[in-house]
Image (cartoon, rainbow, N blue to C red; front, top):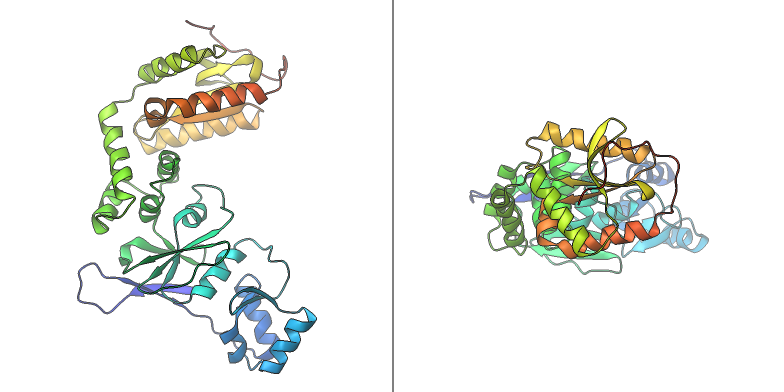
Length: 333
């Protein structure tokens, strides 16, 4: 549906140009069906005109319900728009060229978080009006290195996406997800931040990366931090550093089948080890355990959030005496 290419420009940063291009062989209803299949059931008014669909035919189709308005000049062949990625497609058709999926929507496309209830886009070098359910961000230019094609959509790169989302409270989790999926390196992030100095998210993200370097995570430090939080909040005591289903976990509440793991790419040394930790968590979840993952940054910088999430999990988990294997270890003070 789109492609990204370099603009003709003497600037070293090479601004990206994004063009939304779709050509079909058919005309009339055949061409409309081809476009709908390629664009998640969506079509732009200009495409209808290119297919030879007259104004009278257009008005008739709207009147009888074979076309439905989604955004100005963007219509759907079905109603309501339910197909996955249809909302993102509609946003790009509405905004036109030099537009990329960004912020929370880009994070969802990269698999870092759940799909938000809105679509976020970034428009390059021009103004586009926001609409209900559509968040529009404007930039003067976007370096070609900060744009990608992913799942058929023009989208901000993983590093730029993290910068755009860095003011969110869950940025440390987004960062860990991006590392776990092998989407980004710290060098990528620093380079992207250097390309957009002064952008709102660069400060928080740079501070998070520097904090990781300074804190010097170890498993023993994580255990002590978690012990202090649990004791200070007078929560039910877990078993620390025990084994479940053949794997070691950081903390375990047997009566609640609740497990806590302390996450962190730096913490676990390298990407392969981090991936093994994720496989371990998936194994436990598949066996019916609740697994909460906290980053070292959360333990030390957001302790109230950690305590609140643990307390909530302990309260909502139904008491059971069956289903889980016996752990190796005993509650420790």
